[in-house]
Length: 74
Image (cartoon, rainbow, N blue to C red; front, side, top):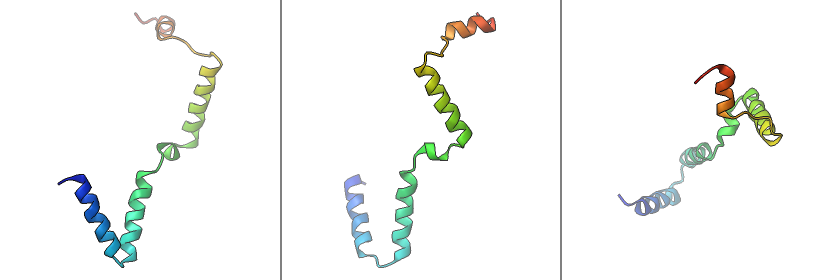
């Protein structure tokens, strides 16, 4: 089925409904879809990411080659 046609049919159903639970369910679906993955991360992960970004900004980084050499990898 054509996506535009499906959207029109859903809009028509939404306009015609008087059932508040249907409207709330649809709202929950959209809210869930708009949620940012960042919000689901634990604070410890967020802090680690922020620290990593600061390290990059301040030049505290090592190349892959340097890490391999330090670990004795070939």
